[in-house]
Image (cartoon, rainbow, N blue to C red; front, side, top):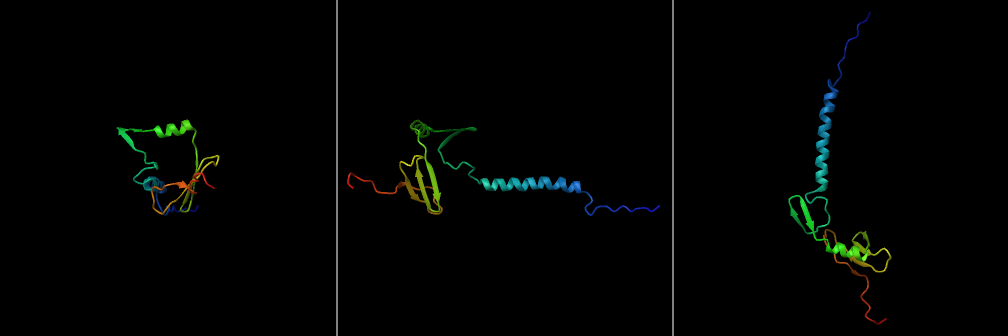
Length: 117
């Protein structure tokens, strides 16, 4: 009867490798997630808020007024161009968005018509 020699695997403890790799991969993913979020968090709208412990209180007066008037609009962003218009297309504001700008002014595309044609 022939005896078979036992050959240990090249990496003796694959379970140990898995037990070390999973937490390491989790730490890498967590660091990548925090880098994507950045120091400002995910709140893209810079509303002024008052903080009381874990609570934030913001003035929602303008939001309530827009809701009571039934306002809604669509924002179209193209390279360096921005247009804001309501869903029914009744008016439009346009502006240029220079690279790196954090605020832009939107104005009508045409000068106002003061009675003359």
